[in-house]
Length: 551
Image (cartoon, rainbow, N blue to C red; front, side):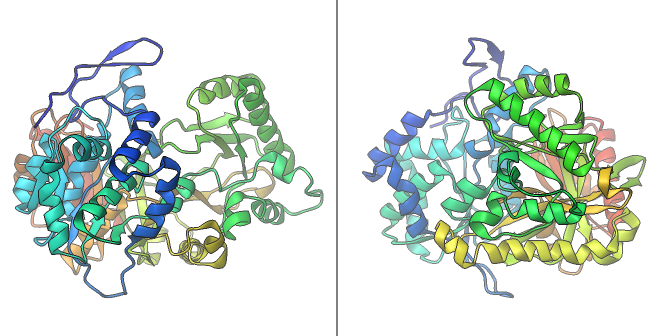
C-alpha cells in the first residue's frame, strides 16, 4: 500500500504552509500515540522500552580487520534532531528544505553490498535499490514523515507487509541493522521485530539507547554559569581556567570524558523566557569577564545540520542577546554560548572554506585519520580526507592533529569506562563523530590558535559516506564528497552516467540523489585540495548538464 503525500502542513499556531516536492508527507505521531504503540506491539509500559532495548539491541563492535556480517539498511530521520521541525522552519522561511527523510533513506543504499537488504518506501529510495540490485522491502506509507513511525504503524495495522523482513532475520541470525539513530520509535520496532523473528538479541550498527538519547547532543560539553559560580578563577591563566571549568561539565562529571573545548557555557532553557534570557546574558558576561572575549556563537543543544546557529554575537550587546534569546526559547531545547572562532581558511576553485576537522568512531573503533568538513556557513556540505601531511595546505596547525585523534580515543574510552557503566551505557558507542574548531578567539588567548570539540554527532553521519567510498576504492589516499541540490528532473541513474562522463578518468560516484532536494557526489584526488577541487568541478559539470541547481 502506498499512500499519497499531503500538499500542505498545518502548524500548531494555525498557519498552513505548502508541503510540496517532499519524498514523504508531513504526518508525525504524537508522544501519546507512540506510547500507545509500545503498549500495543510489545505489551510494555513506555517507560520500560529503553531498558529493554539496552538489554536486547546491542551495538555491533567489529574486531579490527574483520568483514562485517550482512546488513539490513534502514535509515530513518529522527525526532531527536528535530528533522521535521527543521524542514518546516525552512518552508516557513521561504527556503528550499532538505527533505530529511528523502535523503537519509535514499543515500544509505550506497553503503549496500550484494549480501545486504534494504527497507524503505519512497521514490528516490526505490530508484537507489533498483540500481543497486539488492534484496529490499518497500513498506509503502509515504504519508508518514519518519520511516521509524511508518514501520510502527505497519507492524500494528499491516504486519503481513513486514513478513519478508522477519523471514530475512530468521534466516540470518548474525545480521546487523544499520540505523541512523536508535531513537524511541526504532527501539519499539526492533524489539517487535526481534520477537517476531524469535531472536533474544539483535545487533545494530548504532549506539545504545542511552548514548542515542542522552549523549547525542551538545548540552554536556560545557558547564552552566551556575556550575562554576564558586570557582576561584582570579589569577588563573586562561587555559587553566578553561580546564577547571570543563571539569564541571556534565560530560566530565558523569562520564569522566575529558576533551579539549572552547570557552563556553550551557544555557539551560527552563520554563520561563525571562529566566532563559537572564541566563544567556549571564553567560555572555562570564565570557567577557573571565576570558576577555568580545564575540560569541549561540547554538542549540539538539538541532543538527548547523540549524539555528548564530555566529559573531556581540557579547556586550544585551539587547541583541535578549532578542536572540526570545527566538531561541521558542524551539524548546537548551542552548550553548561559546567563543566565536576565527577558523583557518583555504580556497579551492574560487570557493572559500573554513578548515573544520572532524574525526569518527566506526563499528566501535576509532577510525583512521580525520576529515575536513566542507562548510557553507554553518551547514555541512561534504568531507575530504585530512591526514597530518595535508594539514598545512589547509592552514591547520600540524601540532593539533594528534590531540584531535587523542580526543576521539578519549571519548571512546569514556563510553567504555567505569563511569559509563554507572550511567548504563558502557560499551554503547558504536559510531559517531566529533567536530573540532581550530582558530583564534582573542581576549586573554591573544592571537594564538586553540583547539576545541564543538559538536558530538553520536549517530550515523555524512562523513561515513566519504569513508565508505574511500574504503571501496581500496587504494585511494584522498577522496572528497560534496553535497549539492539536484535539478527537479535529475534522477540517480542519469546523474551516475553524467558523473562517469565528467570525472575525466578519476574514480567517482554518486552517493544519493533526491530530485530537487539533495544529492552527493564522491571522487578521488591526489591530495586533499585536489580531491575537493574535483568534487566541486563535478557539481559544476552537473549544473552545466542541467542535472544540478547552480551552486
